Length: 343
Ligand SMILES: [Zn+2]
Image (cartoon, protein in one colour):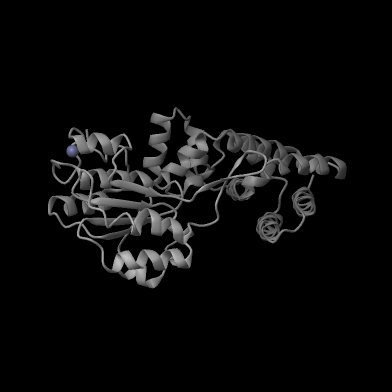
């Protein structure tokens, strides 16, 4: 078994890691960038295990030695994770701290890296969400990066390289997680997560090359409820009066926390209507289990009104981001959609 076995579509990165281990050319600093769920943590874990392995095979962790066993169970004292702390809210729930403060870097890296590795050849520090390091923390980290001990390796994971100081970027080997092709994601979902063909299509369009995101969404009850709510709403909106639109808006507000997903779904829905209306290739329709419904609805909208609806969806998204009242913004959006339909 390979330590990289479960990581799909990242051959280039893995090849880089493999070579660095087999040639013994491990850098003191890496940045792995990619969006949320893109597999940065899995990659960092696998690479760290390979770096620490006592008998790497072709630059990969052997999965058998003492170091590997510790690494793979998450108990290798020479692999340290630095993460954003969770704080306790008054009501007992947890909330993530806004940033990684300077003390975290001083205590967990700068003061720790001076101590030689406990068991392995190297000491690997993995900083998750490095974009949340505040400037003081980045400057503290820079001190270590300027004169690292030979055995020190810092791996920064980030969804936003722009938040990092130029001086950190220039001292690191920068690697980017690759986008995965739609077919691979679809096959994975169908095979491993038992997602039916038509449902996989929606997830694939949504994931935009991010397999982790597709898996996450496929398992999210909220996402599936949201999709059902959208299909139901869009199928009958043209028959609704103001009071009913008020009720629908209330239901939509249940998805407030994930509202950007809802906007994406809405946009996909109206693009589908456009495909059906123009007599385009229906295999391009994303909501495939709703093809009949979409074809039927497409007769009620003119090209002009579809265009206007798509624009209003964008505008509403901007307004919500600017904290305009959710109710007002959605009522206007739903009225625009309703009135764009000619009975
Ligand atoms: Zn090993």
